[in-house]
Amino acid sequence: MASLTGKTVLVTGASSGLGEQLALAAAAQGANLVLAARRQDRLTRVADQCRILSGQQALAVRCDVSRVSQVDQVFATIDDVFGQLDVVINAAGFGHMALAVATDPHLTEKMFRVNTLGTMYVSQLAARRMQRQRHGEIINVASIAGKIATPKSAVYAATKAALIAYDNALRLELKSVGVNVMTVNPGPIATDFFETADPSGQYFAKVARVALNPVKLAELIISKIGHHRREINRPWVMAAANLGYQVAPKLGDWFAGSVFNYK
Image (cartoon, rainbow, N blue to C red; front, top):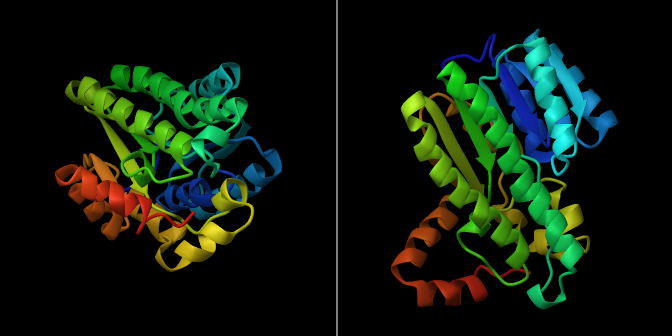
């Protein structure tokens, strides 16, 4: 897709972090945007920036993706205003670093509702529309943690591993109608994600030197729209480590529990 001009793009989690940068990168390509997130004030600010960049429409729709009724309202808005949906980018999500045995069950449920079930429902509604159109792209931001789980990330890794599996099946189901599903598996990103995941700041301090730049990552993701990419895995060192994990899982466990364990 050489240009997103005139295309309708939905971005969840668009009020901050990678989601915000994805919205801005899509706007720079001329897209009409529907931005969804819980924080209306921050979402409105991002929408204002997008309109300046694109010269197109940018709607800010308050939405908690864990609530079905609010997701339904987002898609009703898309149908009413644009009548079609060309790209959906699911970037909503959060993490929490804690031992599996110490994680509150309510937090576990909330993380699955946002990171996995909410993303799956958005993807399902998008896929139904794209099937009728016989074109479109669904981009889901998972995590390298879904492939290489480390201590104190059991629940978060599980939510992302489930999403990767879902994408793999959905990709096969939609291939025949010209709809692509791309999964993005990043390692640590320099965003406010860690303000919730690790309020102490100790983890990010340890990984800051390898943390991904959210602006560059967003530009990379947007540049791959229309190229039928299956996955984007970054940084390269973690992508390579995942391949090694499949070949030598016992050695991979040692690396995950020591070399890659910064928590």
